Image (cartoon, rainbow, N blue to C red; front, side, top):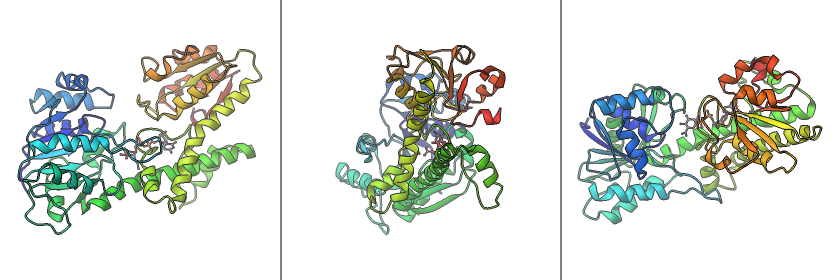
Length: 419
Ligand code: SAJ
């Protein structure tokens, strides 16, 4: 295998930073590139700009070893890893503009023998489009335009990340990896980069298959969560406890239903299935419906609160948990935030108290809402007429049933079932 001495990681976000830190902690010289100067500065002073267990420790070790430094410009290296966001446009089509910008940024420093890996979750065909873009930008180099291309100067592959926020540092090393090369040799070259730290197995395939595999993984989870969320609506209509129904159904050896909740958030599962719907709108009926079911859940929860609030004059609503899933501080695409926004939009709801033990203050998009106040969970519950548990953070288990007594409790997460 070709030796990997220096890697340039473009995008110091949720995936790029842990990957860069892990490579550097194994002795590889790593340059982490980000367009945001504050991010560059934070990393160089040994601080992660988001919270993830064990990441700060890993980052500090990498900086102390002198193996990782952040910069605003890519520089020459043996390998390049692109880990930039691929959000969707308002019409749900994929926005791959950050991938194109990152590709354009590395093009001038590419040299014969390099390997370029796209890690960002991408619609099928994005890696090929990246190769075509590079052909235009660097006519002096030979790129892998077909599966059997030989005499290639720059090897290109798609190796999607699949780590779970909250367990990234461990999963990065332990999870199996799909390595999709534009050619077989490209896959081999990309594999050599991950072999620096990978303890899981790696599986080689072509770039398009790797792109689809990643989308399928997240669509699979979305469809399964949608099943649970749909059951929660049906059970509510029937007056049944969905948690008990699921618990008992799961006693069947071939049934394993996931948990209903406030909805599906985050920047992955709520986004990626649309990339499949986008290329196959007629066929992807289940995948689209799952997205719609999950997107509808925050509205159902908000409607439950609004209905119960009608019995009170000036009701105080305590919303517990704002992040997109339990025990993280990430509020991107959070269904809990959406519920708070829907409640804040109601004229008759004047006091909404929000508590999230993983946050120090309200996220920026809620700060303009005068009626929404951030406070401690105990104070929120004490003052509330209605308590709505929007995210099942472990800290809320400390509340206990006594705290919640004499209050209307709406719990889409099933947390009090588990208290
Ligand atoms: N959720 C439920 N019920 C469940 C499980 C999750 O409502 O039973 C909700 C969560 O509260 C959250 C959302 O779904 O709002 C997504 O959470 P998650 O923990 O399922 O997944 P993510 O978005 O944190 O990470 C996913 C993972 N993908 C899969 O498990 C197939 C991760 O491995 C990927 O690397 C990540 O997406 C990604 O970056 O694509």
